[in-house]
Length: 103
Image (cartoon, rainbow, N blue to C red; front, side, top):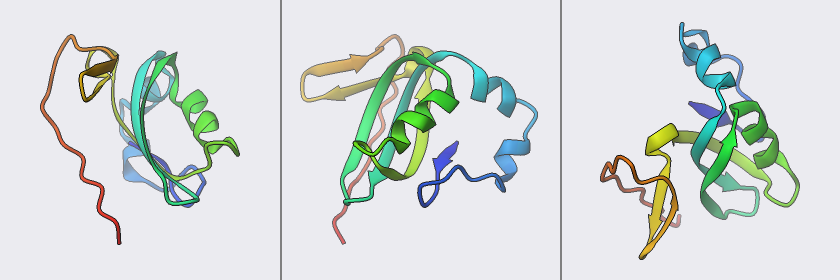
């Protein structure tokens, strides 16, 4: 789900009203995320086991300063390969790509 829009948690999204959202939002698991910081940096990361409210607070901290952020995946699919280094989990590998294009 979308975690931050313009630095704030969006409360008007239809996904937040979906039947399983509360369970996902409060479940404690590894979280994989992408965000754009206020200075234009693009951040990708994998956390230890935390819930989404904790992740949102971490992304809003001044030293991170995410403006827009999404949760990519969690649990046993929360892994990120950078070069030959694995961050998080590789129990299930799903080939995906995220393109970052400078405007």
